[in-house]
Image 1 (cartoon, rainbow, N blue to C red):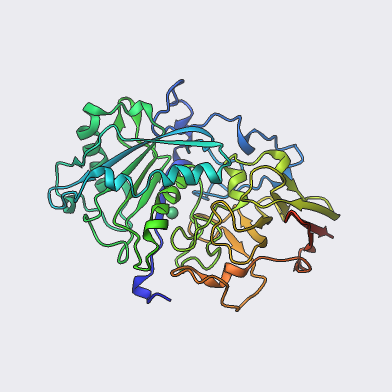
Image 2: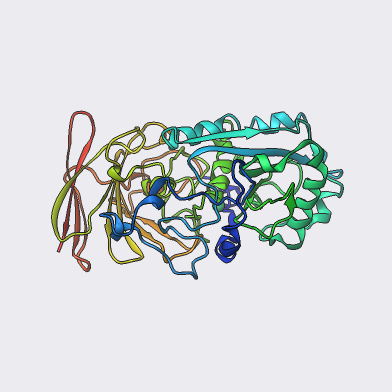
Length: 426
Ligand SMILES: [Zn+2]
C-alpha cells in the first residue's frame, strides 16, 4: 500500500463538444486531418448502425445535459478513433523551467508505447501516428508561472494564452492542418509533482480554441510531470497517462470519481491508468468502432439466451453482450484474460458492469460488479484499487438483479478458454 500522499490523483477532462456541436458540422475540410474539428464522418463503428437494427435497444444515450457520456454513438465533435490518426506532439519548456535533457527523451517516455497500446487495444483499427516536426524544446515566451496553470484551471484565460503562444512559436515549423489532435508534453520540472497535484488535462471538441493555419486547436491533451509513484513501475506504465488523455479526444469519459477508482478499478484505462496494466472495457471498444456489429450481442428480448465470449484481448470473435435496462443504461458482459493490454489480470473471467449514459464523466458512468466483495482482491500491483481486481465471474457463478428480473450466469468454459454466458430476462 502506498500512503495516501503518494497515490496518483485523478485528473479531469474538459469537454466542450456538447455545447459546440452545432458549429462543428461545417468546419471539416476534406482530405486533411484538421486538428480538432474532429468531426469524424459517420460510417465506421457503431455510429453506422441504424437505431432500428437489432442493436437499437442497446444504443443507450444520455440527455443533452450530459457533457461527455457513455452513449452510443458518440456525439459529434470528437476525433474518430479508427483509421489513421495523426498526433502533433510538441515538447514545451519555459524560462523558469528549462527542459532538462533532450526534448526527444521526453517524447520517448510516451512513444512508441502509446501507438502500440492503441494498436493492440483497437485490434489494429487505430493507426496512431505521432509527429514531431519540432524536435527540440519549444520555448514559450512567458515563464510557466505567468500562465496560471493549476488543477481545475479552465481554458480561459490561462490555456488560451498557452495555446496561442504555442501556435505563434511553432507555426513556422508546423502546418497545423495536417493533424487530428495535439499532444503537449510539458517539461516535467514545470509545475508541481504529479504525486501532489495532477495537472494533466484534455480539452476535447473545443471549437472556441485558438485557430492555427485555419483550424481550431479543438482537441488537445496536456501532460505534466511524471506519474512516478516510486514503486518502480514508471518505466513500464508511466506512458499510459497519454492514451488516457487521448481517449478523451475520442470521446471517452473519466470512470474514476472524486473518491478515486473504486467503481471500475483497473479494468479500464479511463479509470486507472497507472499501476496494473489494463485495457479498455468492451463497451468502450464498441463505442470507439473497434468491434463489429456481429461481435456485440444485444440481449433485449425476454427469455433465456446463450452467448459465447472470446477473450476481449484477442482479435476477432464474439466480445460483448449488452443487456439494456432502459434507454440510458444496461449491463455489459465480457471475458477478460491475461493477454494483450490486459497484462495484469489476476483472475481471468467474465466481467459484468453497468453502463449508464445518463451519468456524466467523473460521476461514475460505469460500475463493475464484484463477484467477491471484501476479498481484498488478487493484485499485488501498487497504487491500484485492488478490491475489484478479482471481480470477474467464473463458471458456475451468477449475477442477479431480481428487481429488473435479470440473471447472467457463466455457464462454462471450453478448452480454448472461450466462455459461455447465459442471460435470462423475465
Ligand atoms: Zn481523464
